Amino acid sequence: MQKIKPCLWFNYNADEAMEFYAKVFKNFKVSNKAYYGPNMPGPEGALLTAEFSIGESEFMALNAGPAFKFTEAISLMVYCDDQEEVDRYWEMLTDGGEESMCGWLKDRFGLSWQIIPKKLAELLGSGDTEKTNKVMQEVLKMKKLILKDLEKAYNS
Image 1 (tube, rainbow, N blue to C red):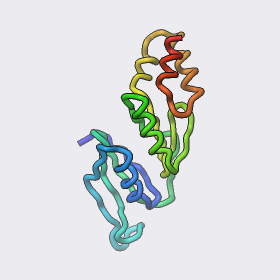
Image 2: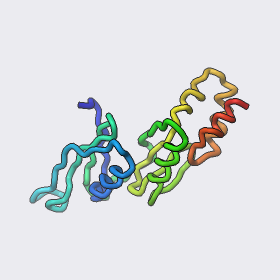
Image 3: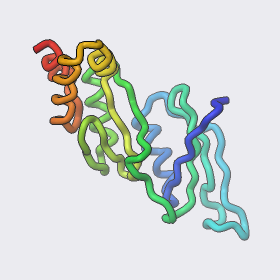
Image 4: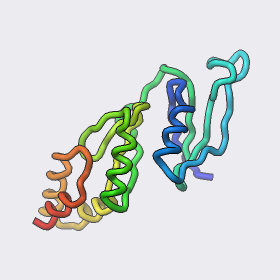
């Protein structure tokens, strides 16, 4: 069991979110569900919580209504092997959501994601301040990250 598990608060649409994420992530799995009973604060019989995983990362969905909303203060990072993977996640997660800057987006539930090519960490961590600055200047111009443009900035 993962020692720290993020709990994501949904506005009574956690079932819909689970269905959506199962389509986005091939390695998505729901492992446990609990439902509202009588005299509980949510609709009786409705989903209360769902434990799920995306690959090795575990999460809890709390289906608790509109009291709290997601903000960009917390985002989920998806490291991608190549541009094709970046494009796929970007397209699927922005469907009904919205693009932001520097590889960030919000999905249709308001949850923030960062869709990042793995290569970006290598480019930014090279130790060459001038090249790192060029890459960051390019990142700041983008919504969805384009790996070939980041590599071009690094090599210029």
